[in-house]
Image (cartoon, rainbow, N blue to C red; front, side, top):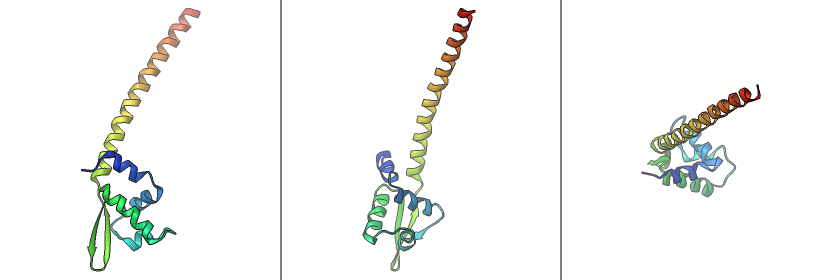
Amino acid sequence: MPSLDSTFIALADPTRRAILARLACGEATVGELAAPFALAPPTISKHLRMLERAELIEVRKDAQWRRCRLARAPLDDADAWIRQTTGFWQDGLDKLEALARTRGASKAQDDA
């Protein structure tokens, strides 16, 4: 199971995010993934290796082509972590807002 660290490190690069966005539409060859980028083949291969090490993509040989597809599990794990963290912060902000309202109402009564 990949770590959240490896997932977020892989997602930190815009080229890798673009590759994942393309793979969200379906399986593609390495050549198809490389086409939109003005990058040398070794650079694209490096990005794909990083995505594969983070288990965000699966790569298989199909005759002379390497075909890639998106792997959902690490993205689902990252999504769950983000949702949990967002919930924590939202709860804290809601409590802070309620406290500010209470203190504001109290101040208004004192001033009256």
